[in-house]
Amino acid sequence: MGVDKSKVALGFMVAGVLTALSGFILIFVGQAVMKDQIIKNTVIDPKNEMSYRMWKDVPVPFYMSVYFFNVLNPKEVLSGEKPMLEQRGPYVYRKRIQKENITFHANSTVTYREYRSYFFEPSMSAGNESDVVTIPNMLVLGAAVMMENLPFAMRLMISATFKAFKEGAFLTKTVGELMWGYDSGLVDFLNKYLPGMLPSSGKFGLFSEFNNSDSGLFTIFTGQDDIRNVHKVDSWNGLTKLNYWRTPQCNMINGTAGQMWPPFMTKRTTLPFYSPDACRSMELVYQRPGSLKGIPLYRYVAPKTLFANGSDYAPNEGFCPCRQSGLLNVSSCRQNSPVFISHPHFFNADPVLLNFVHGLHPNEDQHGLFIDIHPQTGVPLNVSIRLQLNLYIKRVSAITETGKIPETIMPMIWFEESGFIDGPILDTFHTNLVVLPAIMEVMQYGFIALGLATVIVAALVRHRIRKATYETSTQGNGAPTKSMQGDSDK
Image (cartoon, rainbow, N blue to C red; front, top):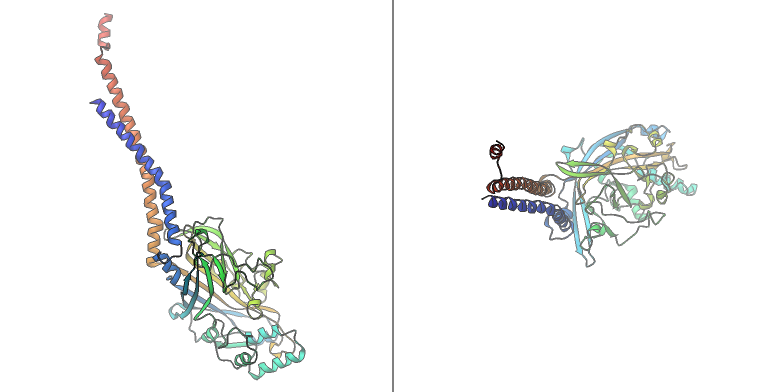
């Protein structure tokens, strides 16, 4: 009977070893299976129903919140005083993104155009598109700076043209007109006699060229041949490099199109992407870990060097001519208009910029940009891209509309494009990326713990059985007991 129990205990030991071994195998096999599934589902392929739909139509609700810097003292500015600004907004627009003309190629790339359209959301806004604000007139003040080196007589003619069309240094228009365009006799005149000078041939507005338009012809890698290349830009409008800037490095088209990134990120990974609106590639850096409803994420932010000038950060010399750090001169891709991009309220910029105007109060929470990304898949979970549009203004002799305006980097608007995963997509992410890996981890370590416990218990039981069997067999072979030994002594 004891022998049978010993064999049973031995069987349990073997079973325990196999169970623990299964747990160790699951650790490696499970990781390989998860990695294989991530690769399979992040490749841009119509067969990947969920991930392909996310890429094609971007079902996550995206919003653009616009803030205007209303000029409170335009007459005084013309007399040489410092501008006093009042932030107005947000004016919130729902952004719809959809890819069309999708064409897959044999070299593991796909070509597409991404169309965007905006719809005003009154319930989310702090005002209506009928609100009236006063901002610098780009047509006058921008043109004045562009033409300051023309002969004096030419500048007088330009000033006379402004007067003929009743254009002054500042515009007082509704938010809707400033955003999407307004009728202007000057614009019609320029488009007729100086075609190509303005970015659009219709109404003139800050975002008129963005609504119901595409961001160019992108060709990106599908990741079919190498998952490390997925979403990376191969070319934009047929170009593999730009010609806006002064150095090959600044003209490089790096990274992705800015919506998804390759999977399997580490804290040393950066987020490079090409932005047609900023006319350049940009790169965000890791800041800290976090989570969104249980899903682990990495937060990436703009480094202080992003808009630094060439003096403070040598690689940015190619983006010059530069002014103070914190300003990106985009005149080379904006018809030479003296336009600069920065972070809102000159966050992370040279503090001297805050002295140009009254009314700016930069802080990271409200004015820093970030992307929260799931490192295993490269899918953004929460995005907030914030940028400010500034106009370089100054007095230009003979163009009397400029009055005695002091030389100023003048904030006009800032906007935030934001979106985060929620609803059914978040539930699917949570199931696939949190629940299933957790179950697999419990199974892995559960098998190891159960196996080791079974081995230990079975070993103890077998040891006791063998000990009991040994003692019984010893007594059965006539070994003297204590009582027998006592009788013998007597």
